[in-house]
Length: 514
Ligand code: BG6
Picture 1: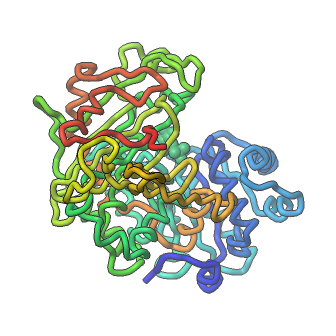
Picture 2 (picture 1 turned 45 degrees about the vertical axis):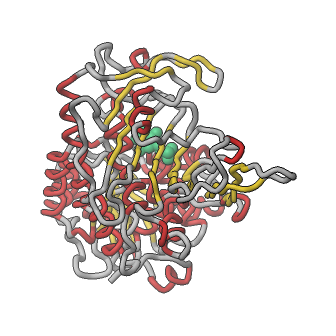
């Protein structure tokens, strides 16, 4: 059974077999910005197998040389570390381009021939890692052709079995996610499948499990007896930019909440796993997601809010309204902001609200989990505002300024007794320096080694879609009715504040406690 990788020694022992990485969507933006820099940085750290090849698969024909030039340029612009000529020369010998349509079996048969000839060249079997980084419309033909051509079942049952990484979006709703799972499961074992959510590759997200389960002070209070609410904010100051075409068919609930934010929720709410093997962890995440109660969508007090950004000022600069962005139809009712109040129907969390929100063109970029604890049971310090006891907060900053802050109450110095919240602060950069690997480095490395811990299992994706699909259907039926508006550069619509007010809470992220 695969255990999660923790040290370089683990990796050395694991002896990743010779590998051929095939990227579908090789001339796309993600390949240039994230995938190739991640592969290069892994190679720089000697974390790739000695024999490792990269084949870019794309629709437009291109010579190997032109492809290599493009990759070199991408590395110069996007790699977190500099590329030295010597290292590039090592890499580029093993880079190739394969042009062909995604729905043409003969092109996949040719790819298979190329792979076999590379294997012959090294006189050894190699595992294939297929990275599907195309628009979702062609996921299905690619998966089908990987099956038909025999590439999916190559070397199955050995340590060089093929693996497939699938980019998001994984489906559009419950039905399409289920169909996609059927297409995958017909051709691949679940152990060969890696559904990506790049948030799981972020250092701080991985560290959440360590914080929870390697420190005994948190677990005893991590429940309904001591926690009054949990808030998860994933906000962005940017608008949709040039991605209007994609975004307008998606919206905040599909683009961010269904995957990234729900994953943060699952990691925060799950029970301790019995071991660190991927299935134990993913079983616990699924259990937490399954415990979520269906959302109240209709009526006086819905637990969901959606809104779209109007013009405003972001960082002092004018920003246009969503409807004025490039590629957005004038009658669009896509939400660029979504907020939800959720409850888990289980022993640990019954009655504790989990507030989630995510949006574009908000006041700042910030991803945070805030655990708000209950107030002390007895009021020893009086009702006077000088003695006000603020609730303890544990703020886990996923990005930027990664770190953890614990807010406690303290007496201010002086002869009178006056209380003030103070912070115990931990910053990743201050403690560990800034040379942190990017999420895609960790995820590609794990997939190469067959470790699915930081990837979404099929049932996990469907559980999350199952909860949100009724909301999406309701919103689609209501069109712009009920779609709120917020000025760019603010924290979203007032309706989202009301979601919390009923229980006496307020959004913490963005509020100053200093
Ligand atoms: C992607 C979304 O998954 O995550 C984008 O499609 C979003 O819309 C991005 O901007 C945010 O990622 P990060 O790592 O910058 O927080």
